[in-house]
Image (cartoon, rainbow, N blue to C red; front, side, top):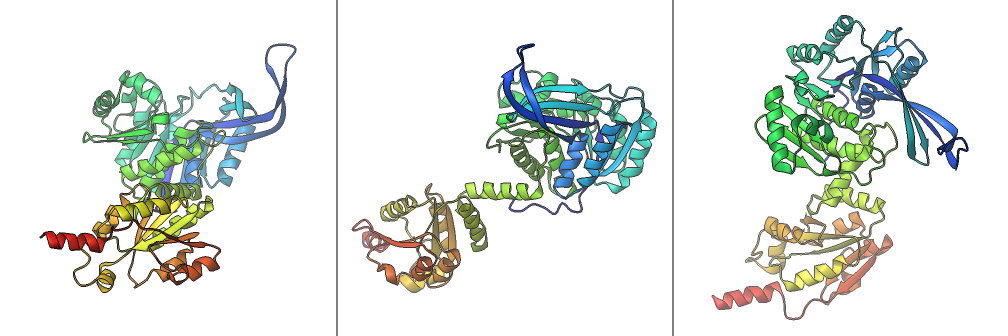
Amino acid sequence: MRDLPDFSAARVLVVGDLMLDRYWHGATERISPEAPVPVVHVQDEEGRPGGSGNVAANIAALGGQASLLGLTGEDAAASQLQEQLESAGVECHLQREAAYPTITKLRIVSRHQQLIRLDFEDGFPDYDGAALLRRYEALLPDADVVVLSDYGKGTLSDPQAWIQLARNAGLPVLVDPKGKDFTRYRGASLITPNWSEFEAVAGACAGNAALEAAAFRLIEDCDLEHLLITRGEHGMSLAGRSQDIHHLPTRAQEVFDVTGAGDTVIATLAIALAAGQPVEAATALANLAAGIVVGKLGTASVSAHELQQGLLEQRIAEHGVVTEDDLMELVAAARDRGERIVFTNGCFDLLHAGHVTYLEQASKLGDRLIVAVNVDETVRQLKGPERPVNPLQNRMHVLAALGFVDWVVPFAEETPERLICRLEPDLLVKGGDNDPDAIPGAGCVRSAGGEVRVLTYIDGVSTTSIVDSIKQGS
């Protein structure tokens, strides 16, 4: 996927256990004389939506339309939650129960390390489930996808009622499950257990073969369409009812805090599906979003801009044939990372040792090597009517297979001067006995502060000599 889909019209209804995540931050410089515990001088505190609230906040942060239905107490924590959610763009439908406090989790953090978590919760064992279901049913016509975020606090004590109402309305239902009985979620479109939750239900799985067999059994037992297992440093595995499975490697660069990562996964899945993406593409986006969010401290969300940048970073990491417009975007991103861009060009009709040596040398002069290739028509103009021996696509494919070549792009003009002047590479390289001042594009490169360099070819090796030898041999 090159660009994010348009999330602005994606409507997701989130239902589940709502909580307030509070953080106290401070310095730790000594141990208490009263007990062997650190003393934290609290200097800052903050609150963030947690549980199903974090799912809804993630959807809103991505630019989608998030509606949230859940239970809170009749207290200051509930008011803080609603204020934060609404300021984040979430449409709130909170049922306040005066008999119970809003679920709150307080984390003490020092030097970016969580020292302790204090939970304030009783759950909602006696709430009026029928009233909440009626509100849910009334909200379904305004949703494209439903997310059930089950943290085991009582809101979704009977998940079947919620699943069936949504399925009867023709809506896909995604569930973040809890507990050891996933048959409670029978009929859901997709559930998203993490690795430990999956093994607690399916049994220990040593290797992908065991995982796949267990996943397919679970899909059948629970009448699911898909099962997405989040596997930490091993990425994700998406299994389908048709016995297909996709293993996605982790996209995390550095794991800082996994708090709320599961919320980000299901939120990204939901908004991507609501925007019309197939489940495989939605999962790839969710995997990317998880890799971003674990690099943040505490319950956090991912923005559409961060996700788009993540897609671009993925593309930068991939080598291959690109269009000119794509190349401009990739080069701009590489420059933002401080990378040095090297450019060369040629026909590269029959790739030989001279070409390979020259290109390898060029690649060592910078961080990214771009190879621009003449289209077939200009090769004929330069080399004669019998050339090229290999058509453009074949020539570019072979070049892109070289590990030290980053991006291969075609150009249709007689020289690549226009392309060079548009790219303004840091280094323009040509081979042979070229005059650096006469190389097309040299003036643009130098005017932009770049350098022009000529490298020596291997003597006696050329495409023309190879073609002549073949002709003589025949």
